[in-house]
Length: 195
Image (cartoon, rainbow, N blue to C red):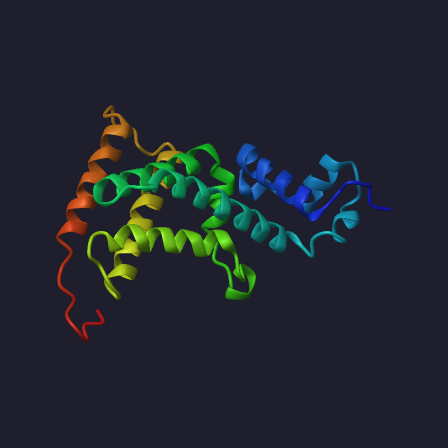
């Protein structure tokens, strides 16, 4: 019998907290069952499997980071918006490394569905980039540049790979300066160039 009070939302919150504390790879149905004091099988009436649980954590995290970015960029444009966006994104990832890791997984369109968080993140990114005068396909290209730069920096920072004595905050600031310059001087798109 399932212990009263367990819901899919509570399982998702517990999995998100566990991911932040121990790492996403440590989140298992068995570990959560132990935490709730029930058998593994009891949880399967709330979530289909571990994959669904990770998807739920990613959807929760996407909403949380979108909310944080929206507040940060409100009323800003250009470099101010870029810096506010990037700082909010990075701060969230550093504060919630397990949740952030969940958002970096590959999901099917069916799994994402009508996720408010993922769609809002795209809208916020494109809105910020439109202030630089970008249109498609440059919006997509610039969005990919930002995501790969932010993710690469955050991944290296979280893994402790920045061993140089220069403060990571200083390098982050210079990275954002460089991205701003790139966005202001975005190269002209050559039609038909699919390299």
